[in-house]
Image (cartoon, rainbow, N blue to C red; front, side):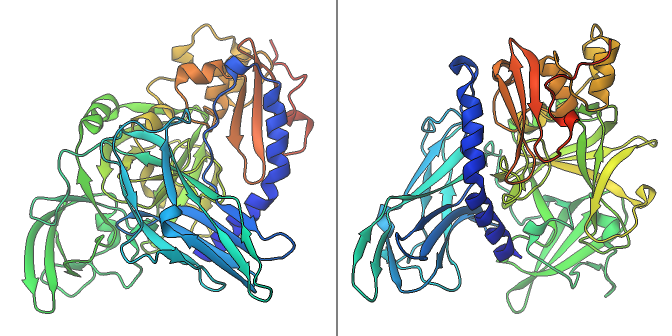
Length: 496
C-alpha cells in the first residue's frame, strides 16, 4: 500500500511541472506586496542520469515509528552505481517565511549508517531520522534535506557529478508537554481504534478482566482509559489493567513492555496551549469555515470501520472534548482532518496532535461522504465524531465560535445566501470567501491572508483551485477540476 502511495506521489511530481509553471505565471502578475511566500509543499526529489533511464528519488516522510520521520531512497534502472556520502546530507528547518528556524534543534541519521550510501534497484532504502525540535517554538515548518549524489556507469566507468537532490516535508512542531507520558498507573489514554499509526491489525487484543472474551471495541471507542495496574509476567510481557470512562467494566491487555505504541491507545498529555484551547472551545458550538469534513466511526464493521462526511457552512457542532495525544505519523490537511501527502499538496506531518470530539445536531445534513467499508450509510448508527488538528493555529483557522450571520449582520442577503451555499461571487471580500470555501491552503495569519491577491486550494494533483482579488474584492476564480462556466467566475455576480 505504501509503495503504491509513493509511486503515485512520484507520478504527481512528474506531472506537476507544467502546472507549476502556469501557477507561477499567474502569481507574477500579482503585486509583490500582496503575494504570499509559498512554503514549499511536501514533495520528493528526483535526478535522472543524462542520456539514460537511470533515476534516483528521495522523500522525507512521516513515520509511525518512534522517531516520527524517515528518509527514503529509490533507484530506477540498472547499470549505474549511485553514491551519497552520508556526511553530505544536510538538513534545514525553515519557518513559513523561508527563514531558518530560531532555536536549537537536532536531526540525525541512525547510528550504523554507512559513510557512503549506495542505494540500488530493488526495495527502497529507508533511514529513520531522530528529529528533536529542541527549543524551536511550536508551529508549522519546512524540513528540507539536500543530498550530494554521485553516479558511475558500470560498463564505461564514466563518473557523473550531479546537482544536489532535494526533498521537503512540512512538519508541525508541537508545544512541549508538562511531562512526557509513561506506562505507569494513572496515565490516561484515548482509544482510537481506526488510526493507522497504531501499527496493529486484528486479532483484537483487548479482553474483559476476569474473562477470555474480547472487549467490544464500541465500549471503548472515543473514551478515555486510565491505567490502573501494571503486572509483570514471564516472557518479558506485562498485564495492563485499565478502567473505562463512563463504564463499570475493566479491560486488560497483555503486551510486551518495550513495544510501543499500545494498540489503538494514545497517551494524553497536557500543556499550556491545550489548556487555553479547552477554555475557549470545550462545551461551545462551532461552525466550520467552508463547511466541515469530519471523521466518525460506525459500529458493526470492526475497529477499522470509519466514515468521512462533508457538511455545509450552516451546520454546527458542539465540541464535547478537546485533548492532545502523544503519537507520531499523522498526515493532516490545512483545513483540518487527516489526508495523504500524495493527494494534498498542503498536507503536512504532525506529532502530538489535538483531537476534537464532536456532537452533531440531530438534523445533520450531509453533502457528501466516503467510507472505509460500509456500503450503506446510516448516520444514526454512527458515533464518536472526531477531527484531528495539529495545534492552536490549525484549529483556529478552521473553526469559528459564531455563525457568519451573527459576525457580519450587515452582509447583503444575497451574499449571505451565497456563502451558506458554498458559492462565490464577484465583489466578495476575503472573509466572505473564507466562509464559503475556507481559508486558503497556504499557511499565514488572518491579517496576511486577507492581504493576499491570490488564494490557492488543493483540488487533487496536479490541479489547484485559485481565487483572485483586487483591492480586497474577488475579481475571478478558476477551478480546473470541473470544466463548467460556473467555475470560471469572470462574470458571475450575486443577485441583489
